[in-house]
Length: 193
Image (tube, rainbow, N blue to C red; front, side, top):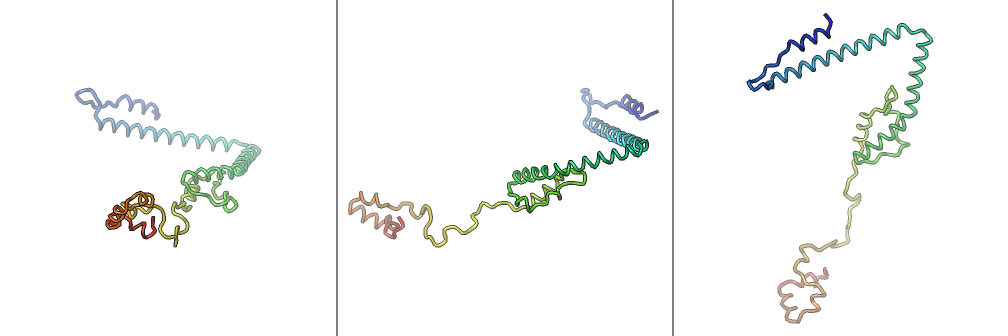
């Protein structure tokens, strides 16, 4: 009896325990999922074994000329991929850098062939590792801002409640004396406003 007829028999003999409402139990469903996973793994293993056997059978029946042709095809494929690979690496580096929000060093300082695998394909894991090692740009200014320039920007809470020059010009002498006594002209008198 081969595997397929045995699997069909397993499928026919397996009955799911059902609750009183006719709905499958959670444990039964989980067991069914595990059974299908196991069958899938077995089928995948069988396929890989058959594929390996077929390729070894084809290789053993090849003549020397056919083997040379296959080797030339493989070599040509790898050469073409290595030529195009550097462009693919450049593109992948730019995409990963843009995604991470970092800037790349100039291209002449990068060894892009280090990111190409032996088969000519782009090694995206190596590119991601390289881009993640680059320093992130900071939002802080590079140099200290406003050193020795005195008070900067809005006076904030210091100027709150202070009277400015234009308001002072519209006040009577009695109002000016009362504002001075209340401390509302301190900033104006110090020259901050």
